[in-house]
Image 1 (spheres, helix red, strand yellow):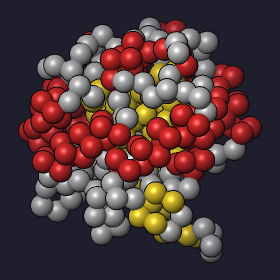
Image 2 (cartoon, one colour):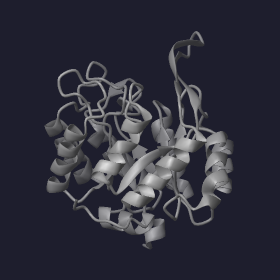
Image 3 (cartoon, one colour):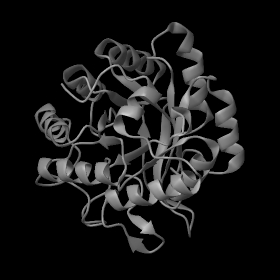
Length: 291
């Protein structure tokens, strides 16, 4: 099977919001992050996405020391590709967000593509339970992309709607992105795009011809998106950051269990799961697992 036919599985372990009270498998401590990343690697994940947490209270942290220890521990344990979040959490400043790239220089990092209403909703009563403005200006998009290029970090372009995708196409001619582009289509966030085939096809049609893409679905959109990606030649992200369940009404034992399910979905579509080294080749990553 050619590299182009292989499926990359990413595990997003914690995010900025999911807590142990929702699923005890969410990691808080350095040791928990390292062990969960290793379990995900053993189940077929070739990328791990990290938001660091305060080990005592579980809230998102911009601490470079904590994040460095997580990265170091994972690198010592397995050759998985490390993708750091530049979103971090709602309290992080723009400087703190990009500092993780400047200080740690990971192989990959998330790069959010537009400002948006980011909300949690009650879908039965159609009321908003909480919301924030997720700020990602054009200036930040170019600044962060430039910093990533200087650090040798591949951006994962997070697209929540068509506006974010068009933003990347607008600034692309400036040459600020590491090529070829890699997109992540995020489905199911209130304030963003719903998952349906028309939206997916539109996104696929608009991105550059040599770009790669993956799906990231919140809640029930997680595995629905995974099935679409497996069939359409995309890649898959799972993890407790996006969904606390393994199936409707049943908590996942950890992100690793969702990785195992994603790998099974890929195989059902007659695609092999990419190894970390194959992933580096597919995405054109310059570095390796070392610091």
